[in-house]
Amino acid sequence: APKGLVSELKEKEWIAGLSGRVFMQSKDLNVFSVSVDLTDLGVGHIDSVVDMVYQYLGKIKRGGIDKKQWEELVNLAEVDFRFAEKGDPSHLASTTASRRLDDQPLADLLSPPSRQIWNPALIEQLIDSLRPEKMMLFVQSQKPFGEGQAPAPGEKETIEKWYGTRYRKKALSAEQLKQWKTSFEGKRRSGGASSSELELPPYNPYIPSDFSLVEEPLPTEIRQKKQKDETGLWSSPGPNLVRNDSSITLWHSSDAIKEFPVPRVQTLAVMRTDLAHESPRNQVLTEMFLDLTGDYLMEALY
View 1 (cartoon, rainbow, N blue to C red):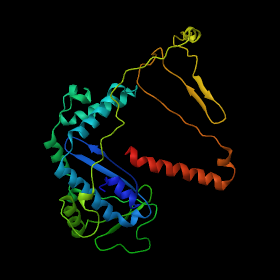
View 2 (cartoon, one colour; view 1 turned 30 degrees about the vertical axis):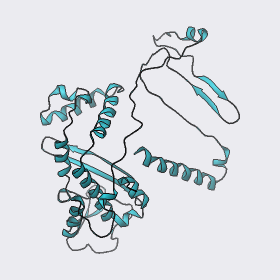
View 3 (cartoon, one colour; view 1 turned 45 degrees about the horizontal axis):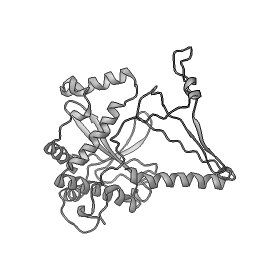
View 4 (cartoon, rainbow, N blue to C red; view 1 turned 90 degrees about the vertical axis):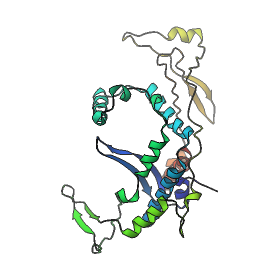
């Protein structure tokens, strides 16, 4: 069955995670970065991982982005914009100033994301610029590459000035560029997953659309406790104990008076057991269980 890029790479046990973002932005230069957390097995398949990334980019370029998927990103950005928490004013000023280097009107920079315009031609132009011949490939590992071996032809070993870190740099080979360009253009070749087997992720079912607040009726005695203290701030009676038995203790606190009328929910689940710390073995197994749970959920949340 067709799979997304992350699903395919995780099934091969080559990666632990993947993300993409604008790494650097200026008036004359923009750098888009794709970061991949490789497993020990994946370190031996770096060229293949890069190849599958270009298969995926090529598929997006040829098939385009679905407008609904674009709207999902706009809606998420709109939520962050509408309900942004108070931040550092100096950081807002400096980032806004740096973004004005490309002569964007200040009104556009400070306006909500909903003002963005759907432009599939511009998206295609952007993806077309992410070609293999324009790529810089960085590989970082705790395990030294080629330790004890002389640098290969065209490879130069250098020691970084401040920390004494050893690194090597070389030009990508013509064979590598040809292979990745072939994948980017969607041409079939022997070996590896073809671009037809990779699909864009399905629509995100977790994007909210209703931000209305539900007021919970409060008993009179609790309502009377909600009053301003000497600092002028509202004092709260604290959370309500919903359930308390041998299996679970559940508390719930509602901002019923709308002191902070923000549609935000925070769920904290704490599991306590003496078995987790009963022995070093149990401690290690508990940590492994938590890591595996996070790894399992990562693909769905991605």
